[in-house]
Image (tube, rainbow, N blue to C red):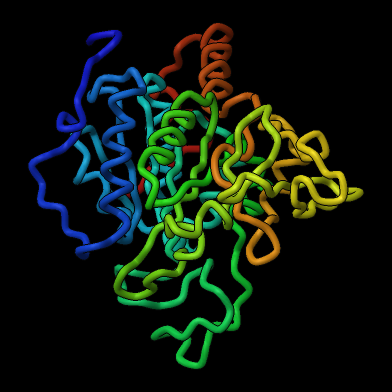
Length: 336
């Protein structure tokens, strides 16, 4: 295998027909992922996409790499096992707000806690699309759907806050209307050692159209989103004259030039700050712009390295083991 493979996007496009609704945000995410794969320095044979169930989970069919379409919500378990079996693989999990946060919520939080060296792309359209429009764990209160005909009364998850609480070592957020930004975020995730989780605001044109329009529409997004850059002050707005500063321990939106406020008063983004990770994860509309980019990136031991080192240590102490001997050890009995 080439150490530095040279690919074009078309090399990651398979011969499968893509079966998403016309206008779905998934198309833009797929295109951006295919482009990002040309930049990560891995051969196609060293990449695997794993999914559960949902519109997003058709993804492995649409990537010319290895792939596994698995069980509803259980992709993290398959991905962990695959990474332990073949540590050289670049393993990507593709999931949605239903698959990943409802039936798969338990698997997801423990994946983040354990920190195996895998990547998670979570499509968030705040609805169940494949099963035709039921409310999901991220749907907003009051949303009328087929399963909430009088309006959803659940309090939705903040995916960022959930990831921070589970100890995510890498969390980033991007939007389906900005391919360049998506590619940058996916590439940054691939370079992280540990579990990288990316939330993508994605539009379901059929069952929840324009749910993210305020922050994804090109006419609005400069004023409603905060593009984070490590080591740079938190500035946003079409005129680049708005910013975020700390007022005690709480963030607040300020205007540069008013009341003597300068860029020096603003928070400087630090991807390694756990405090800032929690603070940014809790920032939501309409009080704040929505943070985009790498929100948190810290170094921590990985689950796969720990397990592999443990197996090596035990083998050095006790030898490689004997499966036949193990199966016939301890309490055994014969069935007649």
